[in-house]
Length: 330
Image 1: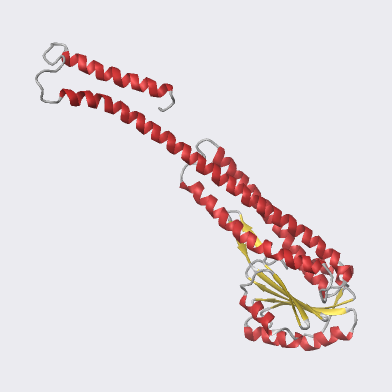
Image 2: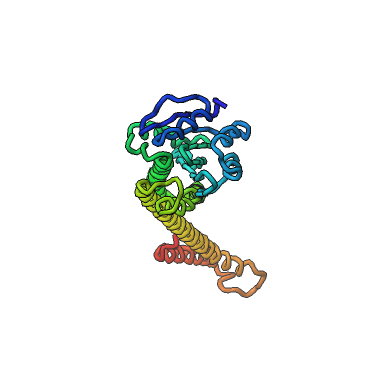
């Protein structure tokens, strides 16, 4: 069990204290004091490893099932004795142009907070340290943990959005640079960004409703003094969702511009092909006429007939070439 427990501590009056290592004793000690709670963090526990935690803290079986399956959309659920929040932290790999998402589940209840993390993305790295440097916030109890974790996840959404914005602006500049949008690599990258923004939206969009609920009244285990902090997180999340929508619109504009350029290039290519075909067709037609097996044809027996026909074909070809060049087809 210790392999999956990242940290376990009792906080009293906003300060970390030494407490019993046994979960049951730690929870009893926290509940014995009015201003204390226990916070345990776990990473990818198995069903057997999580069984003792769920039993000691009285977690609802449905919430436990969700926490173990790790394939949940962001949501907020109220169960008997606990509040269950699902978050999807994201990270952006600039080199690979990929948005990856993890999963983070939070349980808060009477004198306890339990965090369950799945995946390699770890937004909790500095959250506990920052909270421990802010005793006034920790005095608000388990709701302070839920706020601090939500705030860290949502703030990183804004960082990822900024990184995506920079890459999309670079892609936009490449598309509008003459010759820079050639080849299938640009189209592949555009559609790749479409998939990444969709992944990003799956993390940010569904979280808006849970944050609004936490900022409002009537949610157990979230005291009234903690609600303004969740309103702040909700505001940041609104900004993140607005940026995701703006990124999606920008990418759609880039895709439209790229397809328009492809269409223009295809039209240019067709005009060039048509122009060369017309230049080849004229002398071919004249040669075809003189290749017919007729006795009476203009200039057929004239001494200068052959040079005259060759001159005519050359003149027609040069005339068509100059005409097409003047019209921009060549």
